[in-house]
Image 1 (cartoon, rainbow over the protein chains, first blue to last red):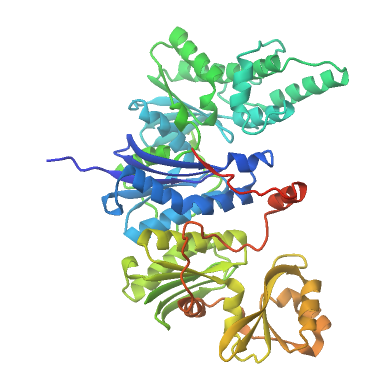
Image 2 (cartoon, rainbow over the protein chains, first blue to last red):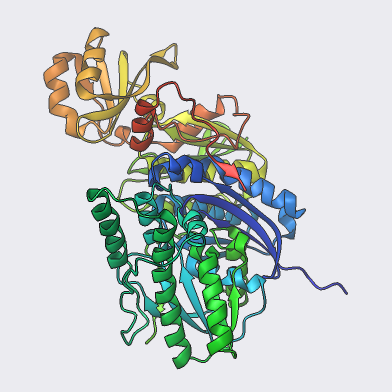
Length: 342
Length: 240
């Protein structure tokens, strides 16, 4: 007898990507429609919430249709509907939440609410199955966290940024270098052409916690550039990028290393938009190989580092097993967070 | 024909089910509860009350704007998702027209208003002719001064409907005895009326392209358009 397929239709609209995916058994992507608004928001130098909401409502039913068609499944084949309900921009989240609730109602399917950050972690689940406990380094435009997972649905923050997220620092520094949002990819590229000659501060690197701070680095960077401008000196852009990135990567690696000393886990998950950064991926890989050979780096696949609904479908698979369903009064929760470790 | 009608364009919410022109279930709330929380449970409850299943619906009618941007998107997203996935008809009706249609006692101009903060408002002007509600001045984003001037020039009695409270004294001062106001519930959206209007209209053909009639660019888009005259901005969203 053929094994029954579990098919989840997943929605993700937390920021500036409208995404709808069909995921089979939590580990196979049948379709992953992503419509990105980057070009629109580049006109404004960053994501404008009202503009984002307007784009989401333009794309949402196109996404549903294309995700189902590309997956070659019908509504009758579906097991459940999943949606990101936070964290993110409230107006953006509401389009996905509303569409998912409506779709679930129309076809009498269970509705699974998913934390966007759990989704990012589960993007790495497409690489290999998780074994617990594990640690996850979540780095994106809105978050920089170290999360301890003791089970498939247990997420505890053990470290967090005190101010800016790492991705936010990339975008702000990018602006000074004349690089449009999102600046991470271009800074990463430039960094590989330069050297860490400016020795920017590594904030909190020696403190006995797993927390981060990137706003001092951002200020040091801006001051360096402005002081040079006043002296009519030109600094090497590649060296600036390399110096900035080296500071971010050093701090992330140091804090992850400290966490691995306390929690000698078998897997370190790397996820979130900044997980696409090659400097960070390479440094973590090397650190694990030389200092923590018992720990494997499980980095989210590059196409799944940014926001997408396939990762939401993977995270929803776990929630479905637990029967964590939402009712029709599900609302967006823009400041949803994992709990801190008790 | 079985119709679901939805209006979340402003603070009140109204939902109705119609069997042809007959309203078989309706709920309107005026409290500040979040439309995202309220809308779907209300739909579920009304459907259960009349023992309808989603697959029995033939047409969705939605108040398409103007109104609160976030509010509009709740009902419009629900409406377009339902119509697309159930493969049924979709009709969008002006949120202002719905209010005007309730002022059946009026013999002159009917001007529905929504408060758009400060002295800004969304407004339109309508009139009943042989029992049909016709447009006198199109729905627009305007301000109190410009709109009272436009109404004064019509030189006819005007009945004001909707979010008139904050503008009441200024409207009376500007339009004097030309102006009157409707009472109580007639100032609230009524999804039964919305459904009845929507039943007479042709369904839209492009459900995917259906979006609220905001009648106003977002501030960022407005500034950008001003700085880039002549630039046609379409196609900023890309599938990857």
